[in-house]
Length: 275
Figure 1 (cartoon, rainbow, N blue to C red):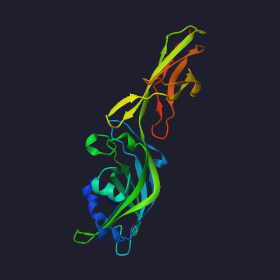
Figure 2 (figure 1 turned 180 degrees about the vertical axis):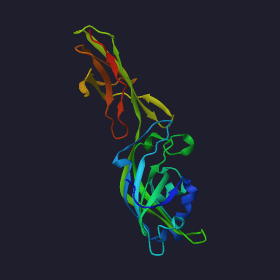
Figure 3 (figure 1 turned 90 degrees about the vertical axis):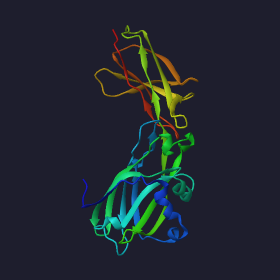
Figure 4 (figure 1 turned 135 degrees about the horizontal axis):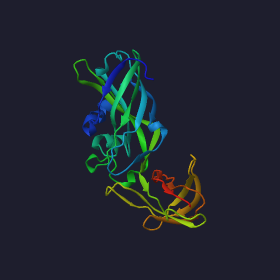
């Protein structure tokens, strides 16, 4: 449950232009006095991105304001975390290897403190340059943008802070399942095939993912739990194939558990009627 009065709802998406002012020598040296703490991005889990769908991982953080500023006047300050690769200055200046919040809302806990919740905005479209190379599937750093505004609306000072926290971005994977024959005689073999692919951020297509170990799981009809019954390795075309013996009615699915650059993938289950 959210507590406290809402102080500000911000749709950022300001891009490199909005942060370039923070990289001027004077601004970079000036301490805003704003403290951003307790940053949590995507509940501490890796962020998985495909080829077309926008991803908006949740973020939350706390803000503490310096003397002379109050949460009752949110137009006088701005603070939020972001992700970047390389150097923080280059990322903010160019807008490349740089991921900002899409929006966030802050709730004041007292006149100097607020709790903020929102989301990052990751669009795989080439025009956004968020994930435009497969090398982006790696560890990203966490930075914080801080600004104070004058009463007349002009920028008073701003800075960028680096943090020790990191976030893993991963390429989305997909896997399919087809079990045949259907129906099948009890005691006879069932052939289960499938294909594993993963997002190619350079081409915005899904390519075959070869040489990966994938688990075949089975859930008997009337039960809730899947169990791994076999494992198989994908071919050069991402193909999967194995056989099992028909015993009872149930559902078969392939599950790929991912790795440091690729997300988890679970296929739609295929039901087999055993007679």
